[in-house]
Length: 591
Image 1 (cartoon, one colour):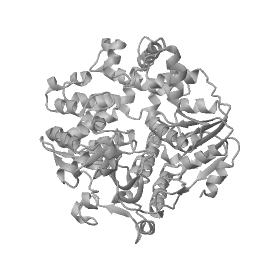
Image 2 (cartoon, rainbow, N blue to C red; image 1 turned 120 degrees about the vertical axis):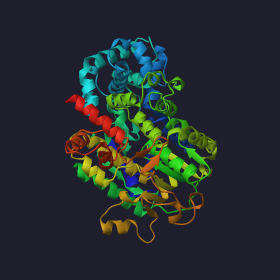
Image 3 (cartoon, rainbow, N blue to C red; image 1 turned 30 degrees about the vertical axis):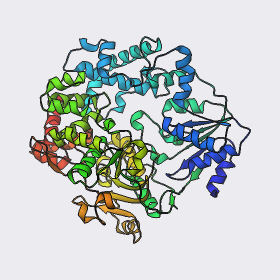
Image 4 (spheres, rainbow, N blue to C red; image 1 turned 135 degrees about the vertical axis):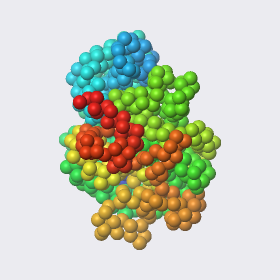
């Protein structure tokens, strides 16, 4: 039975946009939209390959032969790569490869060539995901909030732009393999015309400018669907396309996934955006029915937060026996450049001969690695360093145990616990969800919102929490400090029949509702605030390995000059004392 909102969309004419909340049946709606137009040739534009395969299956099952399902990249591949004979370098270029390709070794300074290569890679990605025709039109330095990283980019801006153009030219001429972003950009610049009567563009809130430009330039009737509050790919230069198109707006506001309390909590979290002076309205109604709990998942904001949680539940507390990681365990132990957690651990222990990654092998010690992270803003590598400082030489044994306990994809739903970051479980759902303790709180949001350069990042942090909350079908275990402080609202969310269970920071498994994790209760305990790592005690808070902001820098230096020690500052700022000392050293060098 279709809702009145769904019928209105199906009966619509011309270009439209659809705001569809989590679990609102948007695929069902688009299927019925296509069914109502049997004489039309329709393109369904999917966000990624996983969504594409699922959509193909669903449209085929309904016998809708008039619908073709593609991703923007698959369209570009057929139009650019095949006819021009390009070779595709699927994994992209590591910094070490760019140093050789672009002959960057001549630059003086400690690891300058690798830092340059990292920024060249980032600028290539920014250009290829933009709607701009020339690299020089981009404000790359304007995207960098960290003062140390920005200073490096400003100092070497001319070289970064020039080498980016050289790299793009090498790909264009076929001298080297092309990356996926490149052939999509080349497709956009060719001004393609897609011969369809209608184009259905899914997950529009996470489209990049280059994809949006391709879509909007088509003569077909255009339908763009998404959820403005689910934009979580800003780091991949996504833009909220729904806010950029001036089409008549339709809504899918009823979620069939969960009950009313989850919907109310989702509204509260999105309401935090008022602190950022942004639209905080969310029209969502939970009309789902709670069922039996068969699939249980831990969802974290970061790879590091997820690994810590998995180690806690499987090894330290022994509350579960089998696990499944969305996207395989190994993907959570590597940084984007290819350095692994083992490379970081070997550098940490001074065992440089065991390091496989060439760039990492060139580091003298952890201080140099910290300096490299400061200059590049490499968040993934920063997280791996955090885990190494957390667990030290226990890491190899811990990861071995995680792999031994890991089930195959076919047995995923048999796992005692599924583990995923928000980005990897986008579009998925589980019967029961436990949130790790690495999401931003409302208090943290307010504290950081004073810095204008933080606003886009903070908006995405709110969106990440909203997406995580709305993955559950039945039960949600959530850190207590993520719940609203206002008593009446909190009481409504945690009502008599609510399946939202707050978890205190000092929580232990035995104190929750019934049994151990494998038999029914959920573990919601965050990583311990203090942990021995084999080399002393490391103090760690929620922001321990997050990028530094100008606002945080200013606050820290004011307190430092008032006599606060690095150890005291670590407690105040939720950082490690080593990171505080390194940051002060960097900032003093800039004065």
